[in-house]
Image (tube, rainbow, N blue to C red; front, side, top):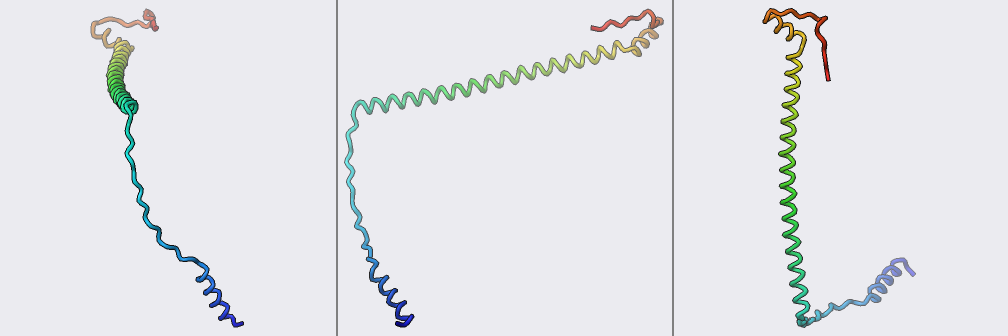
Length: 123
C-alpha cells in the first residue's frame, strides 16, 4: 500500500464517521402569569416601607455626622486661636520682664538697678 493511498483513506474515514449535526429547532416556551397573593403584596409593601425608612435614617445620620464634624472643626479653630494668643502673651511677658528691658525702664525713671536686691521668682 502506498503512503498516499493510506492518507486519503484515513481522510475519507474521518469524514464518513462524523455525523452532520442538524440545526436545532427553536422551541417556544410559554410563560404563564402567576397570581400574587395578598400576603405577598403586604410583604412587598412592608419591605418597601422598611427600605424607605432605612434610607431616610441613613441620610439623617450622615447629615448629623457632617454637622458634628463642622462643630468640632469650629471648636478646634477656637482652641487654636486661644493657644496662639496665649503663646503671644507669654512672649510679650518674657520680653517685658527681660533684664535689658528692666534696665531701660529704670534708666527712664532715674532708678538704680542693683542685682543684689533683685530676686527672680518663677513658677
